[in-house]
Length: 543
Ligand code: G16
Image 1 (cartoon, rainbow, N blue to C red):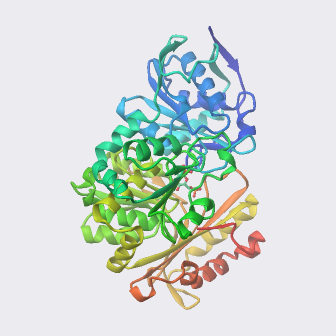
Image 2: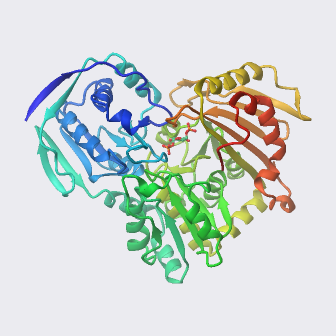
Image 3: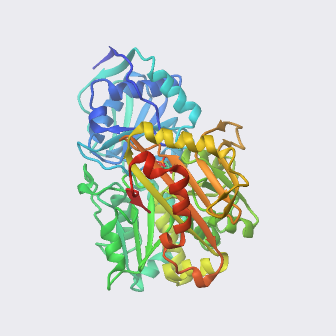
């Protein structure tokens, strides 16, 4: 085995987006592409000599090859030890858990999350720091900067390492530990939730369907929900992680998790439905004929947290991304705790969690989590709901309706326009940016604008500033429209338009969401001239 120093030249566009670098598999398969980025990570961190790293991914196509590349490069760069999930598997929250539990320097997670997989699908890579969370912008900027100047990388010429057999070994002068990817995570879940109560709930005959969408949550859900909590075999469907996710688009929303939605709308629907995404950090919660919006799920979890052992001590505060509905703000106000509004991207929650300012965090993009790790966590959110169902004896629908009755309902929807040409999409945003300065005080379709800006965030912990985080138009009645471009797509640009309206009157809580938001949807289309600028008469995905 010998260390090779390989000459290389920079690739354009190795700039991490909302959550790491995501590109088509073919892009990552180019010679030197992955290597350049991995070396840029190591260099931006000041080297990894003598450090311990965690490596794993969501099992999608190219995962195994990428793990081998990283093992060889970590060894060539002098890593003391690399901890790898068996088979190269580690869900994103499990990787965060392992980094924290073993106090490692950081970890590399291979995933393009909810994006489709397979040879024609997407691949991704991101770096998480020693707190278990996604690297903050100052590190991702440094990685990108390094990638634009890279001239060489180091790798070890070595046979492929056996990542399928549990146990220790060496590659070059680095140690390797192949670990059970589920064990540490399952142990952490048992510390947080009332497993006895949930076991009793299943034993009493309650039923559930968990759709893993043939992605990485399958092994975690099977071990925890079927093996440890005693749910009948078959409760977890599509539980085998496949390289192409079995053709599923592994995004747990009503548009993509159609099998689960059909099941939950059927005559023999189980009591509880849930799904998770490619790397198991997202979740969707479903009752009979009812999809719980992620914003409502966060609010309901926060309002009932005292029923769950790991959170019975109370919440320090809550945080949500700016486009997420304000439902949780109402809960925070009632509890008398802080509610933080951050830009989109889980990395923005890290400082608040580390500083003990927030206990729960959530995003409209089907992400919910807490200070137990530094990633959003799909299986955790499902267990939280199971714990609430078991502790209250109520159904999902009863919990949601009771919440709306107490706090009012924040009608909420997101419209995505996917795979737009980049220039017109940027033009649309720029035109809005130019307009917002003069909008406050004016009327749009009879509604007075109270605030209009391009959202900027000053981190209250480290003072870092993040600008241009989305155009928001807030009306005097509290309703809102938000526009931003996705930072996770791999094809052209994706425009996201978020609409929200608060309704206090219980008699109107049963309205269909798009109907309840019709006025705002029309204003949003007109103000940005969406159809004129994009040529699209309707969104690609409505959630
Ligand atoms: C990532 C981020 C989330 C973000 C989501 C959508 O999730 O971690 O914080 O909300 O992308 O981002 P965008 O609207 O920019 O596409 P994931 O599950 O893809 O890692």
